[in-house]
Image 1 (cartoon, rainbow, N blue to C red):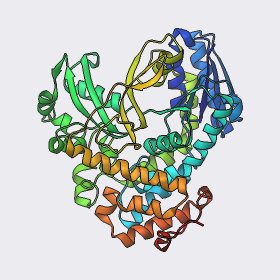
Image 2: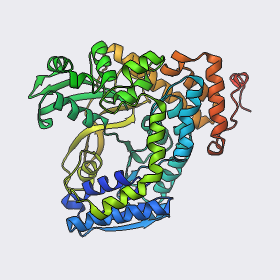
Image 3: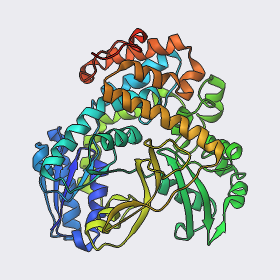
Image 4: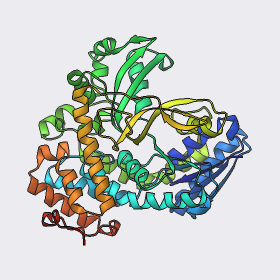
Length: 451
């Protein structure tokens, strides 16, 4: 009997999908599923949702909910983290303050000023989770789904020796999308994908063993395809390689798409895929869910049929490979760079091909990015690592310097404007950043030596 701990189980869709996947494996049919959340209402719904899956599959598994994190973690074999620190009412300022200064962000959960402050709020809570895990389940496999992925994984892997890996579904999700554009079965595609989270590239993409990039260049000429992913297709045309993350996300990571109203209108407004143009969209979407999630989930509990087939998330396959039936599983993971990508700075968090098996999670070998992609990816990776080091040092100057070089922010604002924006974001997040030595940006301190 294996035990799985879900920290942040109130992320209801994630929890029920991950549980469904885990229970599809013979080795985990009788699993102990411990759900933990700080919100008792969401936790109760999560328990009901998991029980519905157990009942539908007639599994001998058990589910228990708790507000006690250490109880959930104790003796766990696998840990899944899906938390949101601060909630939407805090997150909104990550988007609204930059917008006030002219930096139009649409999601704000991965990088840039919004992603960095989300990281700063989340990092100490994540470290508390890991410190508990070190004590009560030191041999567990810890899989993190919480964004911003790169910065959190780099931070945690810098502070702990636990087996911590970051997961995202953009690699396999994009591969499936491209297969659809090519009218190919996703079972017949193969690829090598590497970079950093949300900024990885398919270095090769094959269908039935044949290079599929020439066919993909033809496919993007079709109107329905071109309209789906305007930002990513523009990047593909100019860079020669396809990127793993949606147009909405990508538009806020780069200097080319959101720095003027006409560019936002052209690239970020009319896409038929997930491509929100206006910053207000994401706020309205998530703030609106605060009023509707309970009814929607109750409707699923009362009326929906349970699909017991395994989904595309990596987590259950990883657990099965390591402590289930030990079938090796190949996927892309987020890890600190140890020559996994030869031309990205070592120690930065990268997203690379790995294999999970009875020996754990290991790289399948080194890759080298094309030079022009390395310029882009290195820039983002170095910014993220500077922010991580700023959090470890509790130094607001380092956070300001990281945001100073953010591609979109620096395309829109002067250095003085960026400092003013970042200071306002520090002030708004003061309650979450008590681990900082100071919350005032003061470059006079750069050359001061610690006593």
